[in-house]
Length: 206
Image (cartoon, rainbow, N blue to C red; front, side):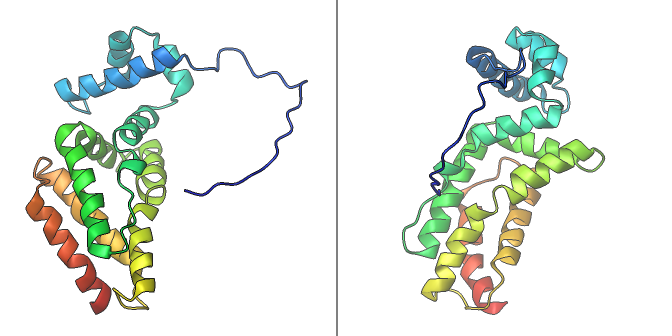
């Protein structure tokens, strides 16, 4: 979203360690294997061993690139739910939210992204690596997707000037996560419209 121009000086005496460069074909095969196995077996039953076998790579290759299962599955989720597919700036809060949620829910209906997110949420209750990935990648790393349109709307006067946009974002995320854990395939137009109606109401009531 932002572009920084900077000059980088590379020390020619520093040689990168061997074996760390990813093979693009193996990388794609691993991500594809995760998606297909989750579709067949679910998150919990998809092991690194099964992914390695399906992708035709060694288990050590996966662990070299992704130290934990949650690291790998977080990257798969990031690929499936690409932020650039969700972002728009129409100049109107309702249109921005409709676009974001419509794009997100379409992905949730067509891919294994909800199963992966539900699995990470579950693992985060007892696994620090999953908690780190969930907080960093799904919460902090994607917060701007929700707060940015709210901040723009606040500047335009569509919602109250002093409203806490982070709190509204938390409420939206909470509603979506609740749906993922209870009715993962019920991401329909009715739910999207309910969320969109809720946003300006909260923005002027809080």
